[in-house]
Image 1: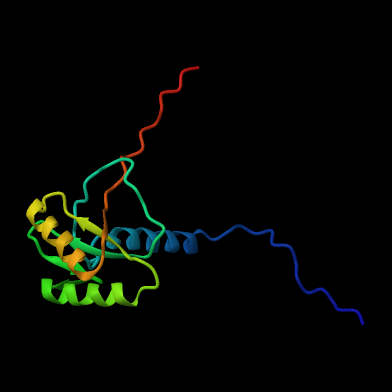
Image 2 (image 1 turned 135 degrees about the horizontal axis):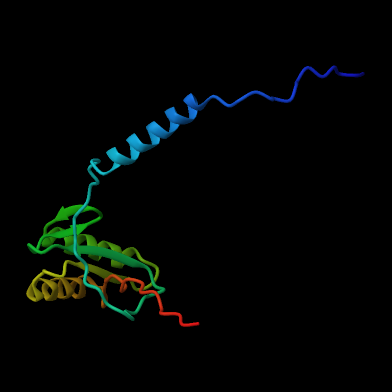
Length: 142
């Protein structure tokens, strides 16, 4: 069976209107993307190099500059956090590591209270989260 060819090679000019419309929409979306509210806590993590990581299961707690605690993206009271951390430590197959995302303006006293709360909950290893230093390009001399 032989099929007839009904298509032809396009030899006309491209219409710029669709391209301009797509470009206009792209620019509009990029400009409005900055106005969209992104939920979460705004933390200023300290910059540090060479902080250790872990290969154990982790649980994260955030501490803002006002001393408020956040667990699983929600504000939480200390008593409730202790209860939840005890449940995490009890149900984990191996020891859990607490990763503390503390704002650099957080009080040292609040950080120590959080570490002691974790120890009382059965989590003995605590790591502090930080940001890596910004990448600095090397000077390449020919």
